[in-house]
Image (tube, rainbow, N blue to C red; front, top):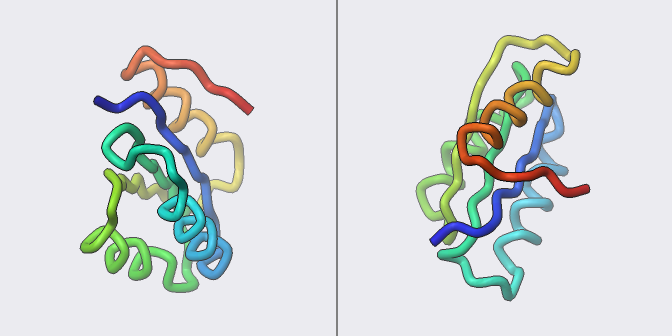
Length: 92
């Protein structure tokens, strides 16, 4: 049962995203108990291809939402909609 969602907004930060995902995959938290949600804000640096590649072998549930580049609070809005849908809270 999912007990934790990690939400990562990104824009043209492919290398940082790859390192972040690697660190998340290495956590000792039970892999069946958490998911990773990536919000790709129109990246043009190969981020989308990286996400597609990682999704094939991801040890945890990995979702990606794409949107056209907006560079505003839209990634936060997408995050908030997903949290509301799951009836969960956001922790910083």
